[in-house]
Length: 174
Image (tube, rainbow, N blue to C red; front, side, top):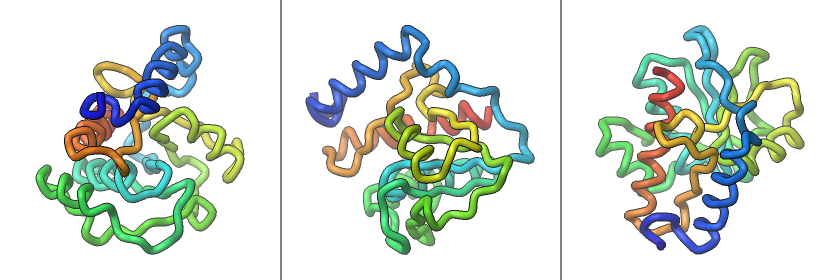
């Protein structure tokens, strides 16, 4: 269970969001792929695992990208396991420092990508409703709107989550 879903709670969230996705609740959060002139802004909870990897990978694919976190302080480095995983993929997170959404400079045409459905309401409460939002997991081959936060998970599940993040970026940039 821990290697596939991170925790029992992770399994429950995964399954609940999957069920809601099956009946179309999150369909509106899968807009068409953005054109190359739009900046991709990846958002997760702490801006230390998922969103910095997404930003670095999108940049490696030639896209303008940035990242920030909904519940973080400013100026902290990426998680050591995220830096290690990125390095194994030919990317670097060494220069990454966290930025809270309150301190981030959004542009009108940013393409906002969040990692899990709960981030939608949190983003709107903190930033507003003027931006359209996409769920990263909806761009994966096997769609599920929920990409679990791997921060407190075992190493095997951490890698699984980071692989899903990269798959979603490929789907968005495809």
